[in-house]
Image (cartoon, rainbow, N blue to C red; front, side, top):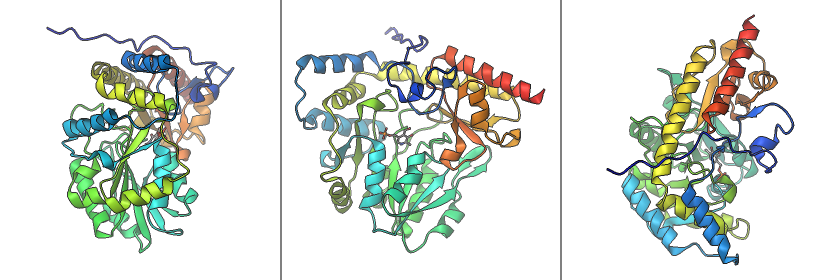
Length: 386
Ligand SMILES: Cc1ncc(COP(=O)(O)O)c(C=O)c1O
């Protein structure tokens, strides 16, 4: 029998002094950073090896996308999602936020409207304005302990100028993996009103709930595929966001042309190391990936247990991502994130996601660090209650 490989997610990797965005925020302060979405783990050994091999060449000239990488993306999308993609549909990008902003500029005209469901990852809220579009925010509703689309409200809020819906699936910060039937309903509305969908699927490799599967929006049906810009990367799953490598899949010829036109002369290609890491992540990291998901599931159980001990805080089930969206509305705290920061835990305030009264906790870290943070949060809440 093949022995499962062991990977070490427990050892604390010292990130202080490495210009890490996450850790520098609380430089010289005893605050555990649990905000921006990167993990404290080392990337898979195969990724590190691939980068080392590439740097050993010592030549870092302009690079084309390696042909075998496009082929690999095509075969992975086929195997994983039964999604038949042509290599020419793939557009490489230095990041998904770039892709979101390019999508906003590529669809419609100045003054048009872009719709999204809130709370959501902050660049969804800023990209329309940066692109001279206005933003329509449709609140997700909480039903049966799950965050869901409010389709009636969504449809009512569409106007003649609504051109684009930016979808986050899996959804950061609420942790939902939308079901096929939810996506079909959303796509039907977008098809009805001729709205393009930009589907950010960066978290698709981080499905923690074993009863859920990720359904790429573009696989629903040919009409939806033609109006969808899918954004993906290996960066969240394999902890490579500093390497700047992502891609869009756009099957619609006209839409792809408009997207590329907005990129022209402005958006650089990914760099050689980003490509090398992405290729390794796609080819040699399945064992690491499985071990990561198990570890994150353990972290999630640890959080759920701790939060149950500190009412009135609650979390909805996290179906995907390593981000817990904590409901602190009943706590009476004016600024929950600041309160916990003072207690030594750096969460991200819900206000940034259009979710006041909530805070997001990044649990992509070693169990011992997580337990330390949760102990601080528990003590702070107990103190508050007196
Ligand atoms: C939904 C979503 N999209 C995009 C990004 C960032 O993408 P990138 O670093 O490739 O710009 C994140 C990072 O947290 C995210 O959660």
